Length: 112
Length: 114
Image (cartoon, rainbow over the protein chains, first blue to last red):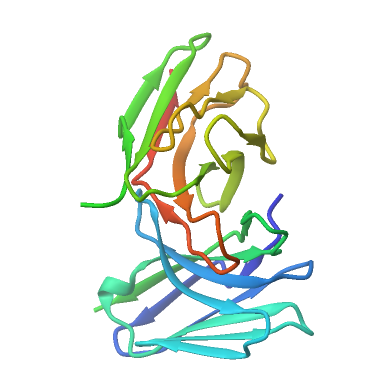
């Protein structure tokens, strides 16, 4: 089952613009993670936010988490053509063994 | 170089044949996972293993089988019972201890049934 729904499904922007992706989930979580996937490749972990955190930064990435609304957002600032990829959120219920549930993903296209 | 390797990168199978996808890691991770990804979709969990000689079904285990005889290896067999096996298969691993661990992914195997 896929718990996360991501919005938008696809996003097309110009280099230098900011990109915002949203993720909604259904059940209580221990943490939420964002991953990136280049076409035809494996996933790469970007950032993890714990359920007791509201915001986290890593370089040009900013993640927010609102557990009351069961939603998260990923903001990429000053985007580059190399940011073109699919982005997935994944939730971990924290049941003692990690079992991530992935969202449907947002395809980001950054044009030069 | 530490990481996860998957082989082959591309695999073609005739209907009715079983095929085995390889996944090896040298990260000393206890937990390993197999996911299936269909075009434009997220990842769905097939099987996972917490430790050697132990594994559990994920959300879509029907038509698949696994083994975990060594810590480093978690091969996936796609059997002829899997009705729609054409997909991109991803293997991942993580530390078993702790609540805030990321998963590390292999490069994937694209399986096509002819």
